[in-house]
Image 1 (cartoon, one colour):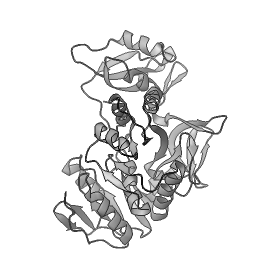
Image 2 (tube, helix red, strand yellow):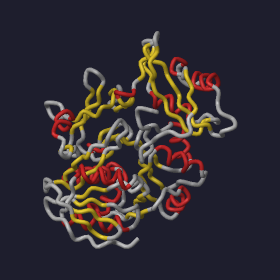
Image 3 (cartoon, one colour):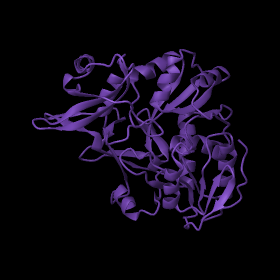
Image 4 (spheres, one colour):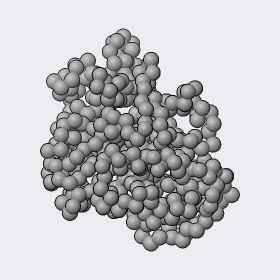
Length: 392
């Protein structure tokens, strides 16, 4: 894909980028970064109508697409902002997060230090630039001068080849790591940052057995991506858990605000300046952060607490399960019951509820096993594989 002309935009103006993944992104992101022009990556996998809604909300001064630039009246933006990134929108409409230049610099610098990244080892960009994890790979090239190779789609074989050709860094979501492990190829020399939640410990262990260094990451769009690696905060990030178990973060990578949404911005921060993540977790005895899941996702059944992600990880490896999501449903006696929404691995041999209950009960506490099974044709997920909630 050729690089379209892109000279519009300046300090205090926002440029929206409406281009599919490709090598052009590396040059465009670097150009806008060094000219100090804030930009918003749009997700080209959404419909034109959906992208138009995002443009109307963001109010950029121009939109850059394959044909060039289209000017808009737009709205001014704080000139200290580098990027406007949309949240994943798992529980509703995505918010637009304004990330400052200093936050971006802190995020990519802290990651490089935590990984002890050698300057010449390339990064593979295979996540959509519309997701903060994919965008940060491109920003590593702009800010740090790191070599970046863009894959227009996720190709496990190409990543195996990159590892064999001298090593590489790559940001993945758990489903991608599962597909990578399934190739059985050597992953020696690969450093895989895996975020997005739901990583099965067995899949991580298999990847390590194949030679990969697997780093689990925790963070949000509002924190400029992952700021906790393998349970440990990086780059000056502080972590605490409030009395209700809510995870809160503070540090140099936090967002400035939600664009054009002062009420949501105010609600996102505590009075003393910590970001409310919306996740529940705990600080372990050794000081590591253990994240249990989204507060809204917790299932309370018969006085017990069940985290959907834990049950999903167990069910996902059942041979008759192609895809799965778990949620709570109202129950007259227990308050809620666990429901498994399952896409059968093969349509002519779907799983039965009791075999799934036995499968779960053999691996984790039986009260976490589903009491209802709903067979569905697909699970609605975000661009990075997170289940869209509420499940329908």
